[in-house]
Length: 171
Length: 282
Image 1 (cartoon, rainbow over the protein chains, first blue to last red):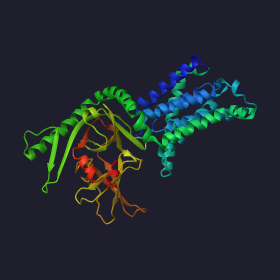
Image 2 (image 1 turned 45 degrees about the horizontal axis):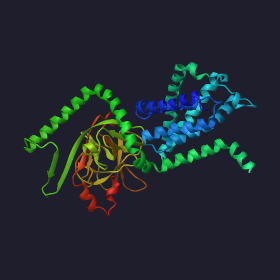
Image 3 (image 1 turned 135 degrees about the horizontal axis):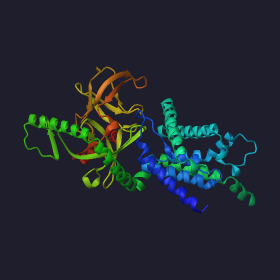
Image 4 (image 1 turned 180 degrees about the vertical axis):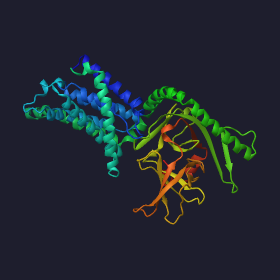
């Protein structure tokens, strides 16, 4: 737990939070859709690693973004939520009956499994985040529509990220 | 005793998860309090500093367009000065006295917009002037094309303002010509339009009418342009008119702004202390 990976993880959440706040918040499509790139931390975190640390780091990254963006705690809430249910989604998508998380490796995922995995987590994250931001039921359809289109944009960025850092991710 | 420890060990992740979610919810509900007391100074100066550096580059790219706009504004102001017959106007203070002797006094601090968002339901603007330059909490933020927002936190060198594109803001506004006033709000849908509410049904409103600020709140001077009427509809809930206003200022393209400080604000606030009117604008 207290090894090189911990520092790499901490550095990466800081970098992702800063990149989101200072670069990707300024990328707007059609004036109302925006990518949330920091979700790659949740997507590509090794599945066999410590879950306590994973949830705590996700919370910490959300909190950093919230402090810089003045959004209260919505990013922290959403990231913790998605981090907690990520393993369940992997389990469902793996299609095995006797599933052992300790022996799971992302290399066993096929391309369609990867696409479903990314799409489900991104959509899940964006819907919760935008619903929390709106915080009322009026205009819920507009919010969900926003979440859907923003998810599409984030998806494209995540694919680009995966292509760029291909070797590092497939641990 | 062992079975309690076993239960905790088995569900440890879940317990951590619940604890962190509760903490996040607490932060969501207590947003303003913890920000203003604990982190506002540090996070405003950090994001302000970084955004300042970033916006230095984008401002450089937009320099020709900005220059042209400023030139236009200068020409308009010069024309006004000539009409008023003033040759050596004092630059910092602006005093306006009408026929009844009613006096409004404002100072204007020029500022650069260094961070701005339009896609959320609660948008904020960061500017590069703070307490050191005379900006205070509760001051208005305007541009040459209209109202931008109200300063909610003034740091030492940077300040944050709640944008007009925020569902929590309410600004006094009136229809130019018949002087009926209502409240300008934003429904969070389109960054180009805001809504003027609380106008009675029997008032005649035409498409293309100008909406401007009302002098009734101490934040903004009277008669600042906000936008024009594009459509109107009857609100079934309140029975009043709901007017769609096209904002003159394009919020996606903000670069320069002015902070308006009312010099009589403290006195006005003291007078209105028992009222709730003042809460409408902050």
